[in-house]
Length: 483
Image (spheres, rainbow, N blue to C red):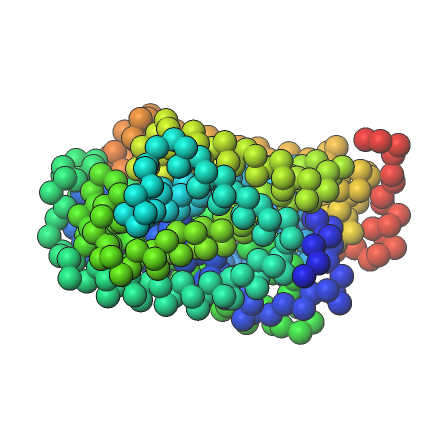
């Protein structure tokens, strides 16, 4: 299969041959991995009981999917990725906000996937072949996973889609075997080592789990969905079918692995750590399937994240090719894996990462969706590519390529989110106003969206979210000498 040559440029309609079924396959297959499964361990590790853990994950996933899924329709219309598409609201240079947010989201999740998958692989190899769990073993396993991941990501969308189709079937079978393997040890009794509710009370801890384990899953896709729907043609597939496919793919792709993680956390009595107890509690016959799940599943999920990172860096640095950008971010992601392994606990690192990125990313998503509603899904695809072509002008040029009201609105929302977040090592000052409950994603989205609406009141064409004719667009663009 040839290597993908497309970066964040507009995909020609003749190349947009994917469909809603492919979208379901890629969202399901890529998420059936330990990097997503481990999020189901977070609520029990916070001290929640079985039903409280399950309800926090289900509610958070459904709320997050309702917010995130409509973003898939934007790239269906623009034929480019979501960060570039957000130039309609933020300006062709201001859409770098989305590129940076997407880069950070994908960086964290890809590193987490390789980290958790590698830890499980080393533990399984120790039980099967006596491989010692030392620095050399971890280094070799992390390096092998990173190499396989970057290979899949560099080859691009078609390879990742084919891999996801295989994983959707294969990983489902492995998880079914896992339920059988861990069922004899399963109990809904509270985990003794969790040491009570993490935040001191039930509802604050439940809300933390709802955001950290449930809502964070769909939010991770706020800049990723367009990577897949840009290959779907609106001439052949309706928006309704694409939206339904996104709902189905996100809900199944996130709930199935996360609830498996909650189930195995109770079966393995994994309160303080997940990878070690998961392998220790596994019957001998499930060790090989567990090794396959840790390796193949990690490559599929981290490969998609790395692919998205390459696109976002390519959008930030138009001179770089997608392949070169992907290699560069692969080095950074691999470094993050080693930093996470040696210098942080899994629970603290995961919780801090997802809460901060959710607070920062939610206002960007809200503003982008407001723009989509205003323009009724009609965009000027040529004007969106101005920055990538090192040109000037077009209806999304605004002030030097930045839409100040949108950028200020996002910044206000992000700052409020950070000030209202509750992390293991930091509590924002606004928590006193919310009774100690982490409402950072709600406040950040509300402040960002409301500020954007208020700052654009009176604008006859808010955010300039309208389409022009090809002649108007072409006349508005001028290409300077190296800018």
